[in-house]
Length: 81
Image 1 (cartoon, one colour):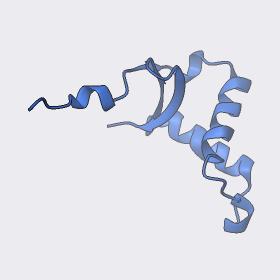
Image 2 (tube, one colour; image 1 turned 180 degrees about the vertical axis):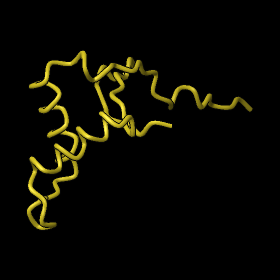
Image 3 (cartoon, helix red, strand yellow; image 1 turned 90 degrees about the vertical axis):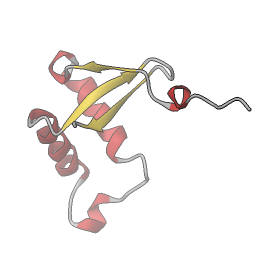
């Protein structure tokens, strides 16, 4: 009985240094990331811009990184190991 390779389900990504991304593009990328689940940040006492700034600080502190997925041709923010 053949087994399915788990490698097919993994992202094949390349880390992209956030400093090499145009600042406006990076900000839009972060805005898209923090609004993916449809969260209304005002309900939590945090504005969208405050949340974007939090994520930007996480990038600067190397808590997260930008990875470009070669399979889906999309960029994502993921935690650093």
